[in-house]
Structure formats: structure tokens, C-alpha cells
Image (tube, rainbow, N blue to C red; front, side):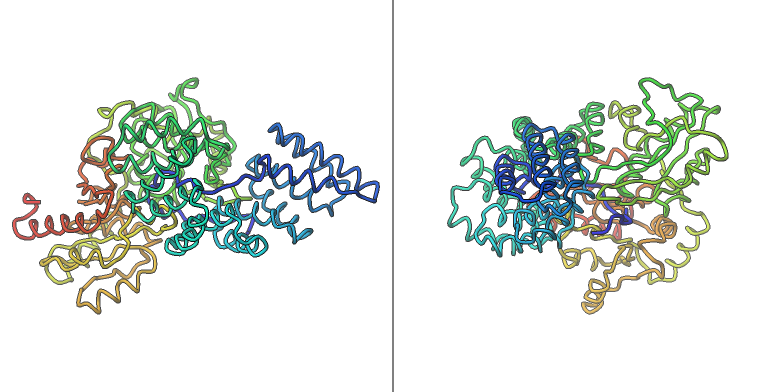
Length: 600
């Protein structure tokens, strides 16, 4: 695992926080008792004995939840004897609990190197690797642990979670099935089986298993949380809110508390409980969440409650993926007006989007950010902020882009009418209109069909197979234009073999976003799921048809995306909804071809 990794932000809106199935805690009472027993063994060297006594103080601090003190004592012990594998293990646990994920990984690895036969270390590191998304590494560590501890229920459960997050649903089920025959009264296993089916999109079946887990253990907070996240898309909003409220007191770690609060915030936003929902959404920045954004900029966080924006020089930092940068830019005109002519708004967005935003907001100074995962934490660097400071003096403050919503969108009525959020180059739009005119006659349909990010729960949000789109691809009077980024050569070859013509423009659909935006605007219509590409189309003002889950929070109790009022939304049912929604889109295309746009 490298200390720093560049992050690709070609992502759709993040779905609700993932299912809770992972079992165990490196700092649980049982785990600490094991560590204490290993510290009780006699030692010969004086320095080693002193190091062990210091480690015992560290373990005592862990028992009472004082991880700062425990971390300090563990470091002191390792200064006395850096060859103590148990010392590195204790240090790793402390650093994990302090959300110092990179150092925790290094400490676990050091412990594993010094005491390779201590399998609990492999299990603890495997859990952390899964939490941070290092799924291949997590799988290897858990397999190593199970080789020494066959039939270990907790490790089998956690390996099933890793397989689930790799979209290997069948493998996860086959791993769990024999254990459930032996451990039929184990609520943890029933819950994890439910998470597998949930992520696969089989929500009605998942509900059955979450309810079985709760029958076995009515106090099982993870199962209640998971049931809440299934009941919501199945239409039981009241039950979902009740489950979420009941689950939260049972959260066992800071991570679980943050994740449950995140899910609750998304529910509130979806129910248009604003501005409360937008205020609750600040939990996305909680350091207990591994993907919580940190911003490296030499300026204070702007607090609009204490510092009026008029005349200030404020930096707005885009966050999450491209789609989120687009929808949350909804509030930029409000901030520009509030800052006024004596102030200045600066905007940091995905580098590929800088020109598009700059045309839309000429009074803003727009630059790119860089997203780096440093020591396990997502950090945004703003290179052009240093240039601003050198040229114009210190910034007065910065604010995450989504945090503007609680300030400027307190009600549904406060959302503005249709307007473009980004503006493609007019020359590029004209160029692509000319290129489309060279194609066979027919409605030019820009097509997206999946997210570039398809891990874990995200897979259920998008059509599982390209073949599902066949009714659209074969629509008479339509010419399909491929706008899907990523390697989709296999899909395109399959379409060609089936006699379906799809034109692919000679550009990089992942990186040439100026052209993607211009081509989207040049098409007669752009359609697909709610991913970065369809959001780009909607944000330009292009005619856009978007598939949305019925619990997509961006609908906020309306029949449209409140951020893109003119975008047509096709709501997908929670269970087996893709074939039906694609047939409805096909019927709408047929009506347009037959009778023009007024018939759609």
C-alpha cells in the first residue's frame, strides 16, 4: 500500500453509506485480553522488561478509551525495544483508533513482520485494509488468518464482506452458506448475507435476512441500520427513520457513528428536511470516515455565522466527484452576490472542468485541485491558492462547496430555475454539431450506461449489463452516440456483432471533458443513469434524460432533480427496476421520433 495515491474523481454521486457487515474490533475487550496475556510472558533483558511494563500502561489506557495516552505509551515502549512485535501491534491499534490510517497500516505490517505467526495481527490489518478499500490486500490477509484458524466465524464473515465489496456476490454467498448451516443462530452472519443481497440490488430478499438477524438479536445495531437503508428505497420511509434512530445508540465505533449519521443526513435531504439535512451533511467531513476530505490550504475555514462574506476573499473547494461538484455549484451565484464587488470568490474544481466553470462564472477565479490519498487519508491540495496568496495576499477563508447549501438553500422554494452551471466552448459545440450532421439521419442520442466506479454498493445503482440497454440501442430513427467513459470496447464489440451501430467520437471520453460537454450539448438528447457524464450534460443545459432510484435524495420529494429542473427523470423501482425503466425510455424515444419533442 503506497503512502500517497492520486485519486480519480470521475465518479457519480456517492450512494448512501455502505452496508455494515464487518465484525470485530482490534480494541475490543477480548482482543485486549489476548494482548495482556502476551505481555505476561517472562522477559530476560532489562530494557525489554521495561518496554513491556510501559506497554501494559498503554493497554490499560486502551481499556478506558484514552487512545492518545495509549499511543504515547506504545511509542515509548518501542523506543526501549523496537523489536517487540506486540508493541507494534498495540501501536497499530492506537493509531487506527485515532484515525491515523497510514501509520496504523505501517505499524500492523511491522508487527506482522516481527511475529508472522501471530494471526490476530493479520486479521486486524485485514479489517483495516477492507475499511480503507484495499480489498485485494484484505482478502490475502484474511485468507492467511483462516489458514491458521479454519472455521473462524468472524474472519469468514469479514472475508465475505471483502468478496461482496469486490462484487463477487456468488463467492460471498457460497462462503457464508455452510457457516449458516452450522451457526444458524448467528445474527452477524445473517446480517452479512443481507448486505451481500442488498449490494446486489436484491433488496426485498436482503430485508428478509436483516429481519432474521434482528429476530435473533433485537439489539443488533448494524442489522437495524442496514434494514433502515433497505426500507427507505422499498418505500417504507417511516420505518426507515425509526430503524435509523434505534440503530444509532448501538454504534460501537466512531466510524459507525459517523456512517449512521451520514445515512441519516441523506435521508433528511431526500425528505427535503432542509436546512437541517444540509447541516447534518457536514458529517461527510468527519475524520472517522476514511474518505472524509481534508483540505491543505493556508487559510481558516470560513464560518458564515460569525464572518459576513461581503468584501471577503473566499475560496470554495469542490469535493467528492465531478457530479457533486456540479450539483453543489448551484449556490455559487448566491455567494458571488454576497461577497459583492469589493470581495473575490475563488473556486477549486476538478482540473478537467476548470474552463467549463470559468466560462459560466467569469467573475470567479477558477483553478484546479489535486486529490491525493496521503497515509490513508483523502487530502485536497489547491496549487493555485499559493499563487493567489503570492499575488494578492492572504485568503480570508475557505469553505467546502457542499457546505454552501445550508446557507443558501433553506427551502425547496429557494432553489433557482433552470440555468447552466457550466458553459462549453461555443466553437466546440458548433464543431460537434457538424460532426453529428455527418452521421446517418436520425435523432442523435448521447448514451451513458454505467459508472466508472462500480465497487460494492455502487453496482446496484447502475444497470448490471450492457445488454439491458438493447431496447434503447435498437430504437428506430435514432443514432446512438457513445459518451461512456472507460474501457467499454467489449460492450461496443458486442453491439456491433448484434448489428447495432454506435458512433464513438475520436476523443478521450474520460479526460477530454471540454469536448464531452460540447458534444452533449450538440446531441438531441443525452440519457443514462445519474453519473458524472449525465450530470455534465444536464449542467450544460443539454436535453437530458436521467434514470434515478426512487430514493435518490436529489429528488427531495419532487418528481425532478431540484438541481436540474429541466432534466427529465425516469424513476427506477427498487427491485428488478432496470428492464421496466429502460422500456419506458424507449417508448419516450419512439414518441419523439414519431411526433416530435412535444410528444415526449
